[in-house]
Image (cartoon, rainbow, N blue to C red; front, side, top):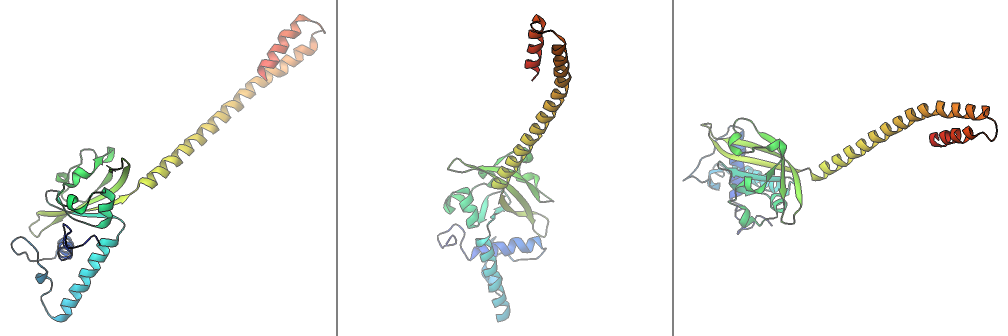
Length: 232
């Protein structure tokens, strides 16, 4: 499993970190001890609360592990602190090398994300298109939502990142747009051909009439025949 003991993010830390982020997004409060969260802070209370906290932790871990979207939790400086297996597969970097890496180093931006920087994400979530080139050389197109997480004082403590791979959708969209362009060109070409035939038709008819009026063996008939051949 991705969440093994030698993983950069221990299983005991992930539910705490997730709960911290989620509660801050909802305006809740979690207590810190020496700058770190401890599960004891989540498990104080009677047995019922303890069981409820355990269920919530298991649910958070299960959702975090099994979602098909890539999910990252960054610190306020944009360093990756926590990620799910889908994110590790998407970047194709081992967990040990992924943890502690700047998120911005894992993406390249296109036109919709020009000048992308976490520093510009403050009040509202940011959404845009980014690209990532894997170790295999393949470039994936991603729809990314980055949301700031603030503490009670209004300071950003984390960022949550959700990536949705839209490579196939974009490929199909471009193929469909190409097909539509070809259909439009075909209709345009057909219309031009129809108009051109309408122009040539009177020339052919009049050339045939002239040819009928000319006597057999007349040298002019050869020129008229050339006109009719060219117009057909």
